[in-house]
Image: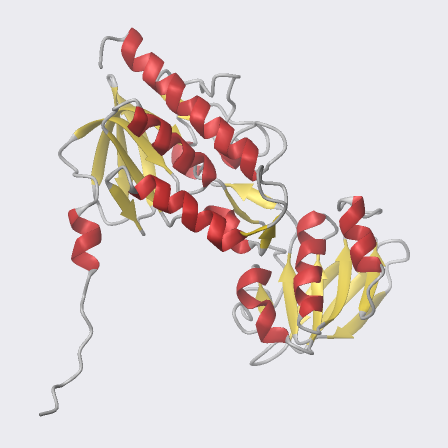
Length: 329
């Protein structure tokens, strides 16, 4: 006898294991990248009542291909590394809420209140902001209109779609050159367009890309607009030295011009720098007592996985000490 096929809805599992709106936790961790996951592990080992609220697990780690500077591994697949982080966090049975966007953070007396886009409210005696950064857009005509139709921000996700295609990469730093490497692996013809004068990528990356066939380098150029009706068909660039414009045939555009801190929920609550990063001291303390920051969303220099993980550990230990000194644990 043939039985009808069906798919099992497991969404209730996430809800059942998530943080409870009516509970005041010792620590709320906002974010799901290396800083947040490291903080969660350290908080759990200190027996703190901790919960995580994040869009997803992994953060920017999942947007790269290989990690070659994580201690103990000469090279490790980025997805495997992120999966191992998540598995470690999950082993502590920490309440986790994924998929919710954080809309507002307030401090009421000695308690932090977190609002999410589904109108849920979570409470914590301390909080770690580890929400990371997001890709900075070009803000040129055609970018929004052709997003997902040739315009992309994640080479790890989308590079295979451009096998043998002509692709423009906007940017001159290490992320742009890493994107170029990913595209060259699938046989794409790559043109790098650098807004400022002089390439900023690591020397080793520059050498690797420049010695590869199929690469063109346009230094001190600006992307003016992205053209195409249903898909990307070309890119208009301007030479910033002589102001002359030219058109490049292109099937895709990858935007790698930097990142913006995801600090909007705490704007007006904590002190930020001109770039919108949360200002922290060497103990991850912010301008608000009981609120700590860790990872790329903060002013800590050198945005690296290993540094974010270390800052997350520091933030959790600082939160623990804060609670002990306040006799709240």
